[in-house]
Amino acid sequence: MLAAETLDRTFHALADPTRRAMVQRLARGPASVSELAKPLSISLPAVVQHLQVLEASGVVRTEKIGRVRTCHIEAKALSAAERWITERRALWERRLDRLGAYLDETSDEDEKREMK
Image 1: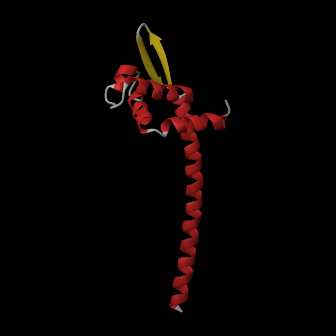
Image 2: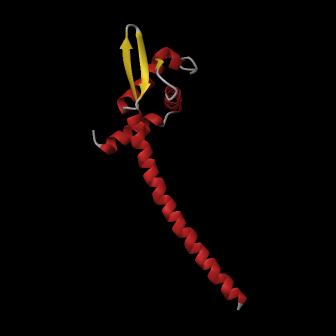
Image 3: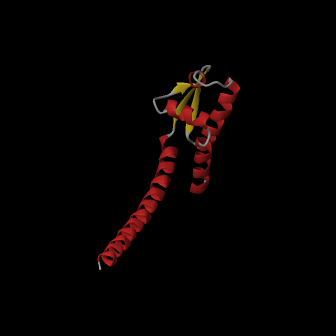
């Protein structure tokens, strides 16, 4: 899968508040599907559908042992999204720093003109 496709799937998976809540819970450690479903006000089949989206994106992986399906977070997928966001943040911070410097310069020039 291409990097852009991976990011698209990751951001799509994280766009839903229910899936973000599931990821937040999994950040504390592995959990069964029923443990993930407990605090949510949706049906178990809906929880499974959300998990399928998270699995398809690579954000979560599940394993079935006996009758219990346990979910784990995949930090690698989240790291790629974090890196993408960090790169954009750095770009915008540099642009805002340049804008701030420009505004400081023009403000200083205005003050000098007013003093004359």
